Length: 442
Image (cartoon, rainbow, N blue to C red; front, top):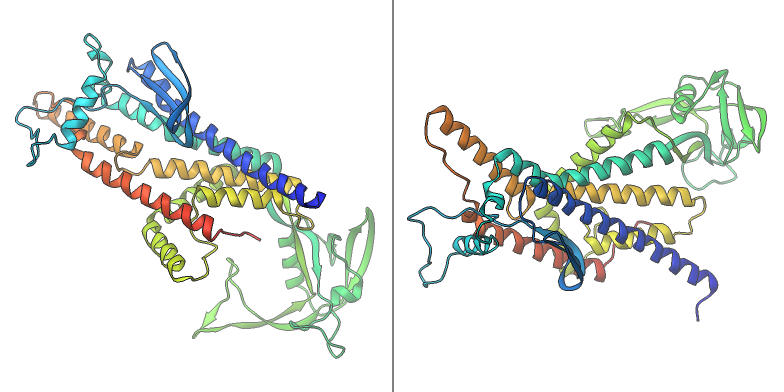
């Protein structure tokens, strides 16, 4: 029988999983609404709107659309009637085995969804701009969710920032374990302690850790008055830095190299490091935050085949898992559980909430980015088809040619099956590895 503390940690872990699960379900539900609402506004027949896959748990038909929930909550879908246009005369209907081609099969299924007299309600009859709106609606909703959550995170809670507050104090100048022969750390000798807020250094007011760093770097190895706030009381202490040779770093924090060796320079050494805390940001920071996350996600997608190969190879050969590599939905759930179940000193509930929000922002950005890939059956594939159709129509109009009709995207069904199979294989690999060799963030 576990201890009360153990049971508490388990509840916290489940809390993180539930928050993530609910966040994913809401993101999927709103994504599909992003398709359904404009489709209905444009007169498209929408027979089904479901969250999940597999056996139906619940459903209800309202105004011609069956709304429901299925047993496996790993996605969702809406059915748009008449998705594929009828094929042109002279097309290939049967393959060499006498079976319907994948394209023709898709056309026939699409045609069966349209009852006599409902031809005007087929998706393929929409103009190219309307098709773009319907198909972009889903990913766009995920982008909006990410923007809203990022605003709550940055403006309402705050982003991790190096504060003008002491986090750690070095007991000695040595970079290794201190001995009796080592010179005591200047800040340690002056009585600075973790949690002290630095108000000014050498007469220069300090608002953040960058101000503290710059002021120390611009000083000398001479006694310096430092005004601090400790336990609500303002105090003045005297710190005497010592000059030390340290590697030079650039603005990104990376060592400056020359002929493969780090460039050294002499700087004042005090022996303190900052506290990391949440600091509210102006709303103008949100677009940059989202843009940076989109850029990082795009990089992950580009490197996805290589990362998937490395993950599989390491798993098969028994190598240690790369903790910075890709994770699946199970891995993300594990991370959420670790966030809420952590009992690290100083890791407050507010900071845990910020990390969970950041995780949900990343998930919605991923849903947006992956769905924008120009590959069927993803939304981006249909968007690409609508763009192609619109360009072809305009080109025919400029040349005085007849209307070319809707794009026959059904011909890309073999590609759709290939992409779907690739995603299934990737999902299986990630689930297996996430369960057998889970990622850990602490």
